[in-house]
Every structure is written in C-alpha cells, then in structure tokens.
Length: 113
Image 1 (cartoon, one colour):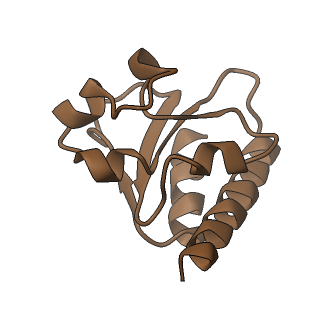
Image 2 (tube, rainbow, N blue to C red; image 1 turned 180 degrees about the horizontal axis):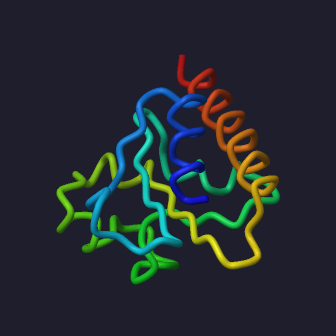
C-alpha cells in the first residue's frame, strides 16, 4: 500500500521527492517533500492522518534534524509530509489520501500564483 500511495501521489501531484532510500525503508512509512509546499500543507489535508516533518520533530516548527541528515534543505523541509500506514489501512484509504493531498496542494499552489 505504501508503494501504491507513492505511485498515485506522483501521478496526481507534480514535484514530489521521496525522503530517504526507496529500497531500505520501513514498509509502513512514506516521507515526501512537495515542491512549492509550505508548513501549512499538513493542516489543509482534512480527514487524513499525516504529519509534517519527521516523528522525532513533532510539535516543532523548525525543520527536523532527520530530514536535514537525509539531505532535505531547510526551506524544502517545510513542504514535507509523513504518512504512517497500519495493518488497518485500506486501498480506499489510499485513494482518499491521494485525493485530499492533491486538492490541498493545488489550492496552496493556486494561492501562491
């Protein structure tokens, strides 16, 4: 499901970069940075459990040291989303997440034009 989430997000949202290795990663975790997004993105995605940054930086407005260690620059780190999938996550949940993330990114980008 994580791979499906990534593939569908890449189709729906231009400018996605995966943070970390595509091969050596947890099967239930996806961290992406979206070009042109900012720290407000996560709060714009209603009904989807998504976090900005990394788990170890939850609650901080500063870019995560984990993201920085992965090579994500400070400005881009503000456009990062982290998805955690569980054994209860379904294909329908993935579809909903993609729809809501892409809508939020479109709205954010439209505001910036």
